[in-house]
Length: 319
Image (tube, rainbow, N blue to C red; front, side, top):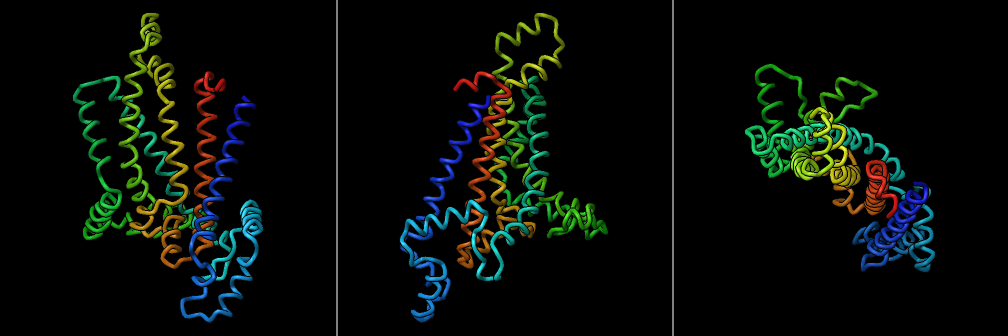
């Protein structure tokens, strides 16, 4: 198990090294005058040269790359030139918001998706199965921004007109400041993200469970007199979790880099909205910091997925 984990970690480090090469080439080597962008189009050459010197852009490429990687490893992504604060400060303020959204929604979509998928699989072609299939297809085809706007219209606007003000229109309140207000502000974003994602997990769980329920060892377990609930939960579901774990790891890793649409609809200043603002302002240090963090989140999530594979299926450790 230790050798298996070490191989996966080394592979993750290799992937992150390749990503740093791509990011460095995209932002510092490609035809893009970073100093001119920061100084403005009308800036005199002296100002551009001064900014270039302060950023180290007049150094040899290998030294620029070395400085870039060594600072990134230490968590130093430079300064946000529009606010005059370190990029890590901007990201530290936005990360708890994205974490609140992703973790809360992930719990909902995982429980809802796996439960619906298992129910559909043990009752194939039944009315319940067809109903859950329609439910999954409906939300799978629903754009996230449209679902968010519909929830705001019916659960905020219409209820507010009737004197019910439980759901706020958007924004964020820190959990440490007011737990109840935090929950009220997050519940609509949670379900917006979770209902769309749960549809994928419902279909994935159903297909995987149907494959496993047709295996010989499941029939053997039933012939030995094991109860159906135990067969489904202890034997079939565990074997069916492999593709679900894969999808879950990819989703969590990707969404930690920012849930752009949901954060924009509900005015949540998380990493996704921060990245969009930085792109509009051409704030390169913030963009680079969020890109590297999102990449690292995906790599780490995949390492955890590999470990989960090894726990679910010991045969994976041999590859």
